[in-house]
Amino acid sequence: MAEVTIQVGDRPHTVYCQEGGEARVRMLGQMLDQRWSAALRASGGHNGERALLFVALMLADALEEAERRPPAGAAVSEAALARIAERLEGLADALDEEGYP
Image (tube, helix red, strand yellow):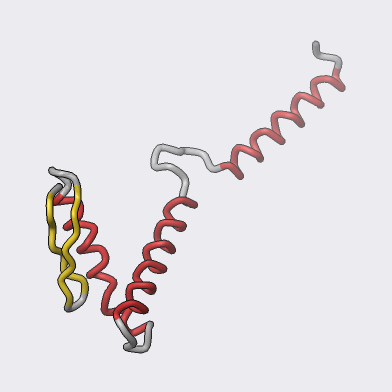
């Protein structure tokens, strides 16, 4: 196991990770630290535990928003696909009414 110290706000935190995962843990620590001052303000300047809760909520909000976005390669939205399907069904019905096989 590798040992990594990350800085969140004004406090260092030592965590353990798999060998080779140190850079990722540091990057994740930076994500926490970037949100620290906003979280501390949101917590009303209370203790670090409450500020960490707000950091977690901010990250959870960002994650939920990212999960709602369509994948990067998706060219057509689900709503657009539904409209296309409705049009195709309408065309199929019209062709049936006209007697096309």
